[in-house]
Length: 306
Image (cartoon, rainbow, N blue to C red; front, side, top):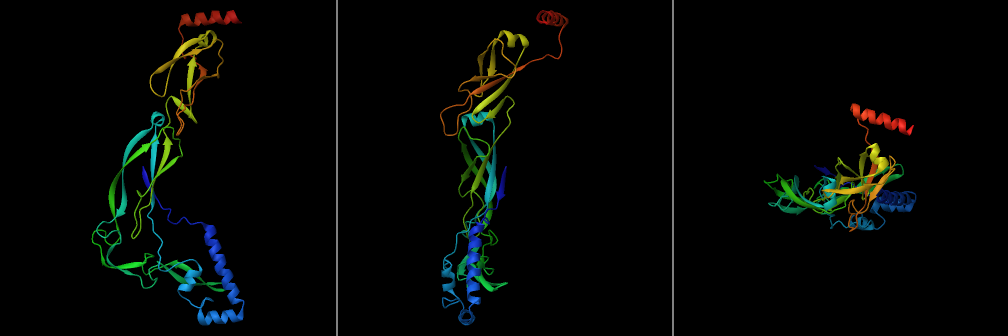
């Protein structure tokens, strides 16, 4: 299962708050001083210009445009415990928006620097606040924040700069992974006009096993025994994650609820060469039906231990 996720708007709010706080503080300083306000009304920013100097005061160069990235995509990978034990290589097919090769992802030919934002993709806007007017950077509407326009729209992508393609990826999952782990395949997400591809995020989850339960790198198996086996002890065979069966010894007088440990028969740890243990949880097997002979024997045993 592959889904798209738009993380392009994930911005640290503290950075925005700090920038806005600086702008408001500066505006308040100007508006609260009659001389500075008069100069601002006549000449703009105290640096002496309403143009590039204002941008540079905030560390922004109008000649430079930030790289745009398309949406990240998410691939949900479900694995069996057997696959987690050995590691696995799989192929997945999905569709994504890739860069249009006919226009190199720009949506057309004869690109021209946007005359409104001077190629920066951002414009300076004035906003009204309770303490006066402040200026803030905003995406340029004239070029959709791209920093350029095109004269001839690409016919292949209809000017979008991207085309839908079927992608096949080979995914190698190492042994010992756990649910919740995420691996990233760079540049395998959606592309965007005038920008670069996002990433493919692969989320790992485990399929519930019919025999084993995972506890970190240990595996737990339930084993039901008869009353004579619990009292007298026995040798029984149990399944293992690598396939096949092993024989274990049940000690005499084993209580229900006892956990017997078989060392190094669990899962390998992620990026580790050591294995966890196989925990055998002992229960009792109570039959639903018994024969008359079995009932007679049980009655004799009941009277004998009463």
